[in-house]
Image: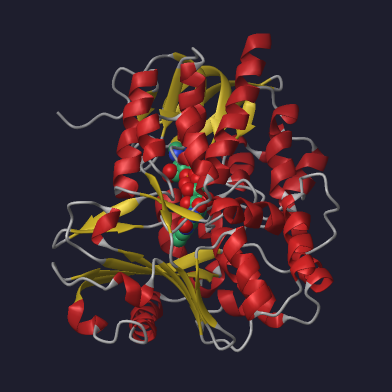
Length: 472
Ligand SMILES: Cc1cc2nc3c(=O)[nH]c(=O)nc-3n(C[C@H](O)[C@H](O)[C@H](O)COP(=O)(O)OP(=O)(O)OC[C@H]3O[C@@H](n4cnc5c(N)ncnc54)[C@H](O)[C@@H]3O)c2cc1C
């Protein structure tokens, strides 16, 4: 019998969650625990969305988006998932920077950054404290015209080296730039600075397996290989969704899919008022990424003291957002996965990530695209040779992903890695005011992206949906 993803699907659910990324799964789990009947429909054959992994011949396992998240993930996972998940979150203690301005190693927390800024960068202690306090006190209602660039100029005037130390990792973490509102920087930076950078021991495969089990325990009807094609709206309210050609009735839908894809493709522009459409059309997608996945031969281990856990490597003379996005790559983040990532597994892997423009890859004819991927691999290996000189001899497997890869597997418009720019958050939050019962819980607005942002947004939206269902 062929596999039927719609087998035994009910005709009605209280809520349909569209997409099984971290935000979608968390919203589904919270709603089911609150007693709602929930269908979670994921178009891919596995859950996780961008929080994913893949296996390749020779027993290699690669994590796509497990490079580091703030400590807040422990609390969110304990509250909204399980103790087992929360207890597997461990700190990455050796974060490195290597660029023409400085080379250093840090635990990436406030205490160590304070030490570095005072001792190494010769900044008065009072200025450092004032900067940290300003960043920590930022919130969503702050002046949005004050940019991250202006924030740095206020506290560290003319210090391009400090801007690089403070900004480069956050640009990788959420795609924010010097031109974005300072609060998109301040909130995420302060989250990391509270206690450093964390990872999930066991790998993304283990995390998603545990989350899948929790969903089952909570009673969520989870369907993979199940693309939602349409959200049906009747008299300003959600009435049903269509998936795999079948209509399922529901009073509420939570889309974890791309914000603009939800508004214009899943719903359709005719269901929103003109002003909202204008506002949505003005939302800019965030950038995409490239990655190179390198699997080492069994038993060929990299010495942890040689490279650290996470290495921000750049040959660019100074930090500029445009340079980070260019196909002429000068800056990369290397994530080193030692056997401790997956205890009992004797492999090392390295994943190199860069930010990238979708159009730089989308417009290439097939042959040039393949050649550009090969070039990306060679260039990455050349760069990694500076830290692991015999990497080519140790290598067993290598593969590259581009913005088109991210688009293909997650359906994110423009292969966006972090959803939308800041203005997307207001549009995402305003959806239920336009269409009763329609919510969005996906990467958006720079703040509500990344693993922690996505999980927390899922919780916030689940509470909204529960309140809506209570009233209706
Ligand atoms: C290369 C890379 C590295 C990253 N590194 C980090 C990191 O180190 N730390 C960190 O915190 N964050 C990182 N991120 C970002 C982080 O992974 C994402 O912000 C987060 O996982 C997004 O979660 P989400 O809930 O928005 O859903 P997404 O992961 O965007 O998932 C959306 C889901 O919806 C599904 N879907 C879409 N359309 C439909 C449809 N019509 N029907 C059914 N299903 C649909 C998709 O298949 C997908 O599973 C990284 C991202 C990338 C790309």
